[in-house]
Image (cartoon, rainbow, N blue to C red; front, side, top):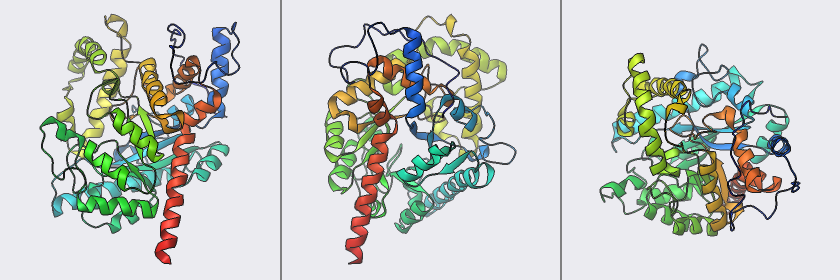
Length: 442
């Protein structure tokens, strides 16, 4: 059984549930006279029974050493103690590589970065803490490991840039445990245009390159889920059309609710649903409600800058953070996490409302209504900028389930959102790979 969260988010039911919200009519097991304590107790039971899975948790390899690793409660949003406290069963640890030059030197450096992260994740699960966490490669692995009482690590690859021009590396990454991969991040790769092309209207491939189309076919053949969270719209639509297997968006939300290029518009969402895929709704403040987040952050930044000054830390904007060398990005995020914790203790001084779990579930509701509940999931983007008030690290994971219960989702639906839909796609992607390999062998 999972440990209950040490935190409970006090969220009013907000005019009950608006007509047309995503959950089934009526809350499972909920009588008209259910008290707040009874609702929370019911939510805790559901949270303990379903498998909770977060598809996007960034890592820094400096946190995977004998002296400093996830067995301790580091100042990061995800650690084993935080997963245990919040009842988060499955964390997809991310082999992330920022976009660099499209040349031999860039590809070589990107490959080394990726291999370093693969090794770090495997070291944690296989050498440092095999009694507490194990890598899963299939949905059956996930269920077996969770039943054993341990946490589950899975591996996603954010940006195929480290593949270089050698598609054999896709198979190598699959053998190392990678089970999803995006073909671009922020910046156009050798495979795909990025959503960032919307900033200046400059595109490299008008969607996918020829190599990108080959990569889609190779990922289908191997059984790697195609992640559409960062590429351009044209590239996404081309991937969906070309792929013989369902695709995923590992950490994206609804563009209709918040118009940023990292979110998916209704046309893209309907295409994912028709493809049989799933969108893992992301708890990233500025993707959920940019205006609300900006107002709160402007007010909070006064406090943060005061604390940062006392710590002799310069607060950077997103572009400056992405420009940091990989070795400096992790320590910077840890300093920011500490500043955020200290400023969070003074939130009462801020005359603005933060983006919270309720705003996050608004996006879940929208996606469920548009796509159908079988095509929607949950992600955080922890330690990569993600998190909202009430789910700001893995220890607060229960609060997401609590809000889903408040909205009227049943236990079966909550299980689908937390892990069932994503694991179903993983199974279908593997089935397509088995068929393609059989046909290829024949």
